[in-house]
Amino acid sequence: MDDVLQLEPATSINFATISQRADFKIVMAAVKQDGLSIRFVSSRLRRNRDVVLAAVQQTGEALRYVPQEFRCDAEIVLSAVITTKEAIRFASYALQKDTGILMAAWNHGFTLSDE
Image 1 (cartoon, rainbow, N blue to C red):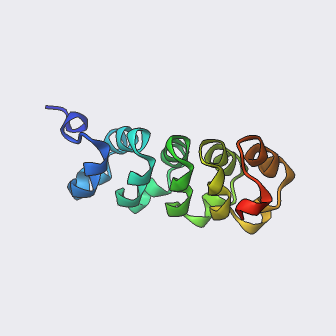
Image 2 (cartoon, rainbow, N blue to C red; image 1 turned 180 degrees about the vertical axis):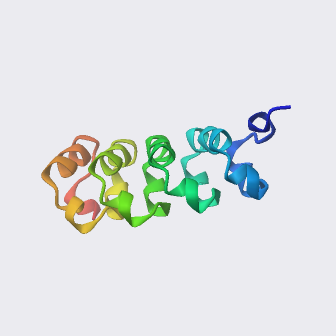
């Protein structure tokens, strides 16, 4: 049986074997279903841009658990803010002040009083 099918729901990846946590297909399936499962994937895949992007597109809160290099990445942060306005709190300081990011957050319901 395919390992991807054995890991339902995706949050069960925290109970997966080390090799499953390092398997790209399994990890992508997991983060697409539950972006917060990025906490449990291998450090190598946590640094994979495609994995990070899939996680923040599922829930912007996943930005909290990604390496700093992605918190400075405008596309990653923008995707996170579009799905979860509060994700702006996990962005780099520079992107928290970026007009384009702030406008996207504003368009999705973020207000300065939310800070």
